[in-house]
Length: 381
Image (spheres, one colour):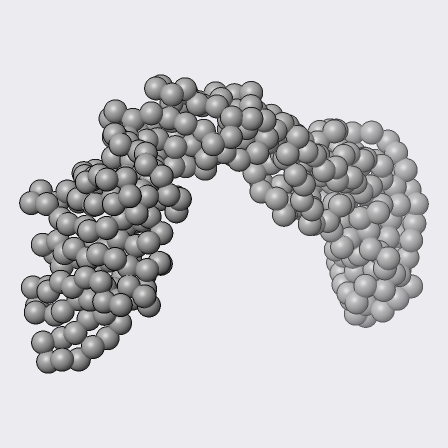
C-alpha cells in the first residue's frame, strides 16, 4: 500500500509503505531497503534541506528521522489520542484527528493537513530550545529555594504539588513532603524538566561502622576508620583520650571514654555511633613476659641504674614527683622474665641477677608512670 513518495538530493526514492508501517528507500541503481519501521501506519513524507525526513502516522503523530533512519524528534501529536486542540501551545501537546499530507515551508516551519478536523496546521520549526533548569535538586521538607532557566518567557509547574510546589512565574520552590516531583519550565515552543527530591528530617540513614583498635597505652595514638565518611568525632572524656575528625585517637591517661561519631543530614537530623575506648594502665602495657609491647612515648622515663655495666649486682631508682609503689620486671633479650620486684619511687633498690652475663631489660610501672632501662652484665659473671 504505497501512499507517498519523495526523491532526496542524492536521487534516492523514498516510499511511505503504509500498510507495513515502513519507509522504503530505492537507490539510483535500483537497490531497495527498509530505512525505518514507523510507530504506526505511515501516510505522508517531507524532506528538509539537510535531507531529514518528516512523516505522519495514523497514531495522530508526526516524527522526524535523519537520512540514515535514526529517530530525531517527535514533532507533534503527543499523546497518541485523537482530538482537536493545542493551537498556540506546544506542538507535542496538540491533538489531531487524522493526519494527512505533511510539507516543509521555506523557513523550516511544518504544515500538516488535519483531515477530519478540516484544518491545515502550522508548527513553528525548528523548535527553539529551552536551556537546562539550574538550582537545587534536593530540598528539605518545609524549606524553600529558587529554580532558574536562562530561556526567557516561560512558566513553572510541578507534577506533584503534594510533594513540591513552585511559583508559576518566579520559580520559587517549596518542599511540602518527602518524595519526588518533576518540575517543568515551559515556553510556547519547548520545555525543560528536572527531578526534585524532598527530604524529611528523619532520613539520614546509618552512621556506618568503626574499624580500629579500642585501646591504647598512655601517650600512644591509634587511627579509627569510619565506613560512612563526612561525620564528626567527639570524646566523652578528653582527659582520658581525644580524637579529631580524621579519626586520630590520642590516649592521655588510664581510664575509659566513649568516642562518638555523628553524621548530620541535610535537613538537620543526626545519627550517631558510639565506640567505647580504653586507655590502658601502665601495668597493662607490659607484655606477658615483661616486655613493654607498647611503651608510652612521652610518658616514659629512664631508670637510673648503676653500675652499668656490672657483675650482676646493681642498684636502680625510679625518680618521680610523688612517692608510690612500683612494679619492676627484668627480662633477657629473648623476652624471658628473669626477676620481678616491688619497690617505691625515689628509693634505691639493690638488684642481684642469678643468671649468665648479657643484656637485660628493666621495665617499671606505677599508677602514674612508666620507666625503662637496659643493663649489661659482664660475661665473666
